[in-house]
Image (cartoon, rainbow over all chains, first blue to last red; front, side, top):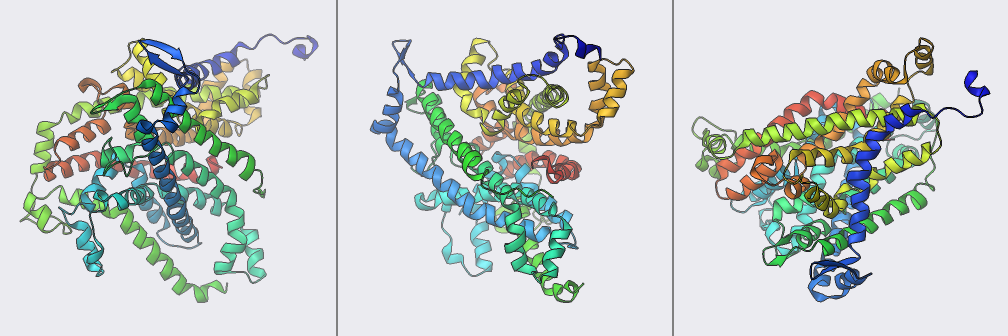
Amino acid sequence: MAADIRPKRPFRWHIAIFLAPAVLVYTAIMILPLAGTLQLSLFRNIDQHQVFVGLGNFRTLFGDPNWSVNFWNALRNNVWFFIIHMLVQNPIGVLLAALLSSPKLRFSAFYRTAIFVPTILSFVIVGFAWKLILSPLWGVAPHLLDFVGLKSLFTPWLGKEQYALTALSLVSVWQFIGIPMMLIYAALLSIPDEVIEAAECDGITGMSQFWKIKLPLILPSIGIISILTFVGNFNAFDLIYTAQGALAGPNYSTDILGTFLYRAFFGFQLQVGDPNMGATIATIMFLIILGGVCVYLFLIQTRLRRYQF
Amino acid sequence: MSTATRSLPRTIGAHAILLTYTAIALFPVILVIMNSFKSRAGIFSEPLTPPTPKTFDLIGYTTVIGQGDFFHYFQNSLVVTVGSLFFVLLFGAMAAFALSEYRFRGNTLMGLYLALGIMIPIRLATVAILQLMVASGLVNTLTALILVYTAQGLPLAVFILSEFMKQVSDDLKNAGRIDGLSEYTIFFRLVLPLVRPSMATVAVFTMIPIWNDLWFPLILAPSEETKTVTLGAQLFLGQFVTNWNAILAALSLAILPVLILYVIFSRQLIRGITSGAVK
């Protein structure tokens, strides 16, 4: 062909034109500000000038009691928030998906649609609706517990320091269970019938079929939902903010990194907002998320066998 | 098969678990909508029963419609969501086409660069985004939100769409080239119509987080003029903490449009997830 005879092809402008808008918007609004935020964390505003302080802000964040108490508290809470999701959301999601994917199950489209409803609702709705339900004023939660004879267990969970975070984590689990359910469901559907039939020929059915055949095959999807949960949890803000406000009460017991970042950056009540400290916290969140993603990509994903059918 | 004989108890068990979880998933939504149609006394005395002629009351809705500027917020949300969706789909499809159709130096690198944003949330860049918007005078405009959401939606859109564009037949495109069509015509006339179903999937995925987002409206556009529904509802609920009728009515008004859209598009959404787009 003519193009091959010539040593050099002419520059293909259309490729650049196809790529340009996406790359420009993405770079200008996301990558550069992200880099800018990381950079800001190395500076401090002294007498209206940005002065380079190296890792000074990080030392303040980890060591200065004004910051470090709140920071470690938020980090601890965030880890607990994540643990609850991993222990409750993902196993229930897998269970629901396993039930849904059983062949000849009736109404599975209805169940799928209904269980996914909370996921599409906004945090504002979810936060407030649950706040009302758990409120001792309205009495829906004690009323329901009364049906099963457990009324004595009721306390205003969102108002007690020791329960509030767990209660909110469970609300978040309630909201997002649709995502692991759907992804696992999709993975289970993609297992070819021959594999299942071969297992049945060998007498492996029911529960042991799930544990021995299906679970190993869906491990890559479980890896994906774990990393999605990780990123989502360490970036969470909205639910806590709508249910408990920016102060993440009672007494900061539901404070996570997202709400801590918001208060540091914007200030709240008596505290003055500090963009540099905000950027420092955002940098820590960035490093945590990046670390999680790297662990996933290099340690977990490469070890999970992918089966090609 | 032998499964038929022993599957009855198993089937009943499966239905029992799924029904229980469906009840847990839908209960709060139904409870809120049900009680929004009751009088204050009805809400507190019989929270778990549907409204009866005795407890039926629309006072909550009249308060909300009288007080909050919800129609305006709704418009803002609509402008922001539709605007960002348009740019995400157009720019995303163009970039996905370039990445999946042509071999050029840096192709893989560019793909990885754009995929970075799938895992790293744009929210972490907020501090500098706010500075950028202040510097360019875009604070408290819907444009700022549209720009941010476009950047937020692009990585996943490019990723999913390029997977689908690889499946478009090469013969078709080459036939177009032989007929003298330009690369732009091939993209807009041949490829785009063929990937329309996957565009719908991407649209649903992009739309939900934008419509529900609270963080960026709160930070970039909190003024009365530019409030979105989510932010408006949040502030409204904060003001009316003690007016339960109004709160429940506002919550129901916020749930209903999303719920209706979901029921219309749920098939599309679920097909999108289960078709292996997120493999």
